[in-house]
Amino acid sequence: MDDFDIVEMYWDRNEDAIYHTDKKYNRYCSGIAYNILFNAEDTKECVNDTWLKAWETIPPQRPENLAAYLGKITRNLAINLHEKLTALKRGGRQTDVILDELSEVIGEESDVDRYIDEKILTELITRFLKQQNETARKVFVRRYWYMSSTKEIARYYGLTESNVKVMLLRTREKLREYLIKEGYDL
Amino acid sequence: MNEPLKLLKAINDIDDELIMEANVEVFPTQKKPFWNIGLARLVPFMAVIVLAVFIAVGNLDRNPITTGGNPVVTVNSLSDAEKTAGFPISVPQKYGDDEIFTITVVNESVICVHYGSEEDVDMVIYKGTGSEDISGDYTVYPDVQDIEYDFRSIQLKGNAGKIYLAIWNDRQYSFAVRIPDGAELEEVKAVIRETH
Image 1: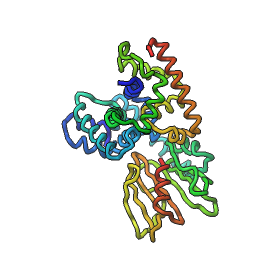
Image 2: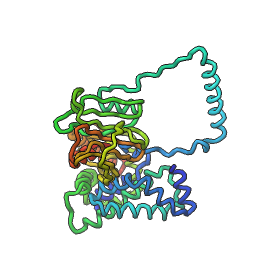
Image 3: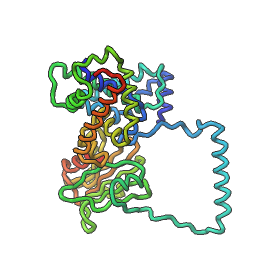
Image 4: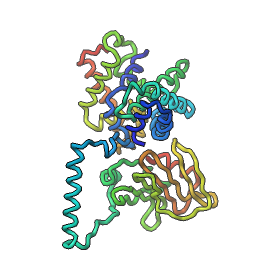
């Protein structure tokens, strides 16, 4: 079913919208959640919560890109769930490794939220990414949005794993410089 | 909230186009139905169709026989196959000790990756658009089993404990793995896991 029609069903408060969303996007959203949670049961819970959230937010939202809209909900829920699950004990999951990598861009002690809110930070990251070359941009988004492993990214884009790591390191350094240049207090 | 986590959350809301651009599986973009394109666009569109039909009819006598190009194109690399077919593919580098020996694209819509050698093909992986069985293997196998693996519903076909064919759909793509000599379930799963 076309996304346009699925969104219309949400607006009509037709519960079949959830069935069609699940049918079309279960694998896509499960893939995103699984990369963060690494657990089939948590992934299932997260994807079901995504459908609930979609039902609660459409309307008033009318997403132009349903895949990205659902993906963002899933990713956000999965990160929150991961945060909750690992509040007591942090393990060696991909998400923890990614958080360690990102601490190079913004240190743990930063009081960044006093100066800039999350939306502005998102805007800065978006602008920064649009200035990067296509491969660097895709690799960065694949790593930090889709939370893919460096090995997977290497395979997806025909690069070596060390190419990917070096590319990510450089992009993170450039992002840090960009944020400083834009007046972001790190 | 710790700051790297804040950054990770801020990345969540980057532009949709950046997210979809990095989606390796090239998720289908939102398209309005044909009949929703609007009258202003529909009229020139119809005019082009009428003109094309007119020209085609006019040419019928002059070109009574038309021949198409070879539907099977051999390419040098997976990236060439992706360019020809217009969609990405990920496959294992090796199958056991066998390496990829040839890659073909059929009708610009199905990528076929062959492992082994010209004389002894040990495995072929197919990826194409649509949901039809693209394996080209119409053998009626006595054992047919459906499994859920790696978030995909896979149909396995085989005989006497060996699997000869695995087929599945993932979003808008159809996949098939054909193993002429048969393989164990775990071997097939390893291939499926690396095939996207």
